[in-house]
Image 1 (cartoon, rainbow, N blue to C red):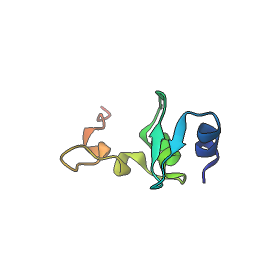
Image 2 (image 1 turned 30 degrees about the vertical axis):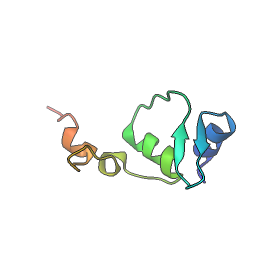
Image 3 (image 1 turned 60 degrees about the horizontal axis):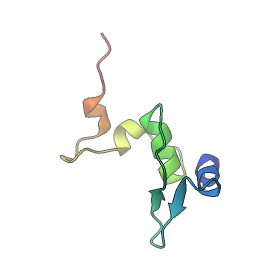
Length: 67
């Protein structure tokens, strides 16, 4: 389990449900989708590819384009 994820569990920010999922117990603000994906999964993830919208498109689809 990731160190940040365990810290969040210990701090009562998230709870581990019986089915293995996590539930946030308070708002947590992230500076990147990858950090959020890392915390939720407990492993390094590319958040731009992991998070999907309702149409199944990755977050990368909504990423602002650099000029």
